[in-house]
Amino acid sequence: MIETHGKEMTSAHYARMGQTECEKIHLATLEILERVGVDVHDENARNLLVRGGAKVDSIRVRIPEFMVTRALLTAPKQLTLYDQTGKVAIRAGGYRSYYGGGSDCLNILDHRTGQRRKPTLNDVRDAARLMDALPEIDFCMSAFLPADVDPRIYDRYQMEVMLNNTTKPIVFVTPDFEGCVAAVEMCEIVAGGAEAFQHRPFATCYINVTSGLTANAEALQKCMYLAEKGLPQLYIPLNAGGVNSPVTTAGCMASMNAGILLGVVLSQLVQEGAAVAVPGWNGGPYNLQTMVGNYVLADEQGVPTSMGRYYDLPVFGLGGSTDSKILDQQCGFEVTLSLMTSLLHGANIVHDAGFMDAGLQGSLQLIALVNDYLGFLRAATAGVKVNSETLALDVIEEMGPTGNYLGHEHTLRHYKEPFYSALADKNPYSVWEKRGATSMEERAARLVDRLLSEHPVRSLPADVQAGIKAIVQREQARLD
Image (cartoon, rainbow, N blue to C red; front, side, top):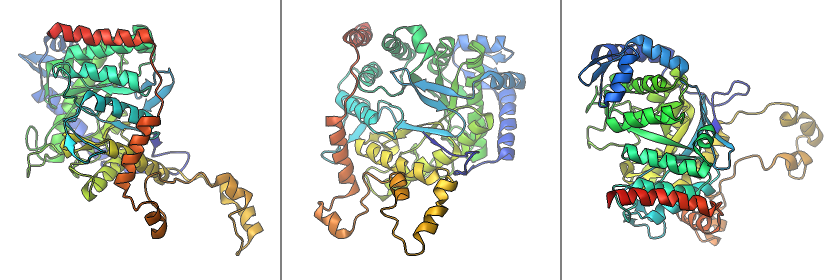
């Protein structure tokens, strides 16, 4: 976790939009919800919204301001996730940022061969083990869409692998409602029952919603199901400015925000106090030059996160990604800038570390590099302690203008505190050459292999493993 905007100590501060801009977008959103409405493609969701005070015309639902105001009063300001040992791992809220991988890349940039290929379930396993091992990575996602399992229920296989290969919190994605239910069932087996999982949830569902003004049935069903069970959710409508919404950032964000607030309203109608996170990316113009859904675009940076912070709701952000296809200069700057902007704006659960090629490719090497970059960012944005110990006036007086501080006890107390990169080479040329003249890319590949071979992962009890597998087998048998 990295925190900015600290109050007790100076720390990094930045905001893309101020209170005035956010207020204007909020008021525009309320007008869109009441005058235009959102297409809600689930009858149960429509009925629930109508009972709460909305108006419905076929599938079009119009929501009055009082419903939004009421929902924002009861939606929690923090979303808490645990690890599988029962310890708090993520307190998503305020300006606390946690980082993890992404899900379902169709290709992998193999760190051993440098070639792009189709991923397998073993790659999902390696990704989970790597994310479990890296200290700056706070949660796990599946990373890849395995080509060697039934594509209709690939997510069930992913969930089984993640539960068996990491103890960190899991963010899971399912293509259908039944997959969400199956994932929750698996987690309940690991936790020791539904009540135990509800009390200390270590997984949450990333709900993909069609767009700001179109709520698909599967997304709505997941939203209501998770809220009813008292489980946290990430409700994420996304817009493409110039395609399904205005090309201007403000217009794109306002119409996207309508769908976001619909999810907040719906979750609170099901159960007041149900935890829901809102999106921290998109909300800006699409790349109309290429018509590709790029992951790192300048104009949208920080816009939806600013709205999430305006509402004081948990934000599911994006960072550590690139639209490059190789580990080159474009990759380096897009990954670093997306990490930095998500951090400074205050996104809480920041996913997609290691994503490449507009989300079509993933890289274990890049996840390892992101881990290193995050260590740098943690140090670069941390508050500076200024007190008698850190000012060291007595030490300065003792050593004088020509003193050598290397052996002083003050140095020995503090020399381990600065950040030292595990992958960046800071040595003279001669030392770098003697050690093999490797690139950072090569060193990252070696780190991945070392961690995959050495990092221990806690084994689930045999009966728990069997219970999880039985759910996957049940889901497969249902389709066979």
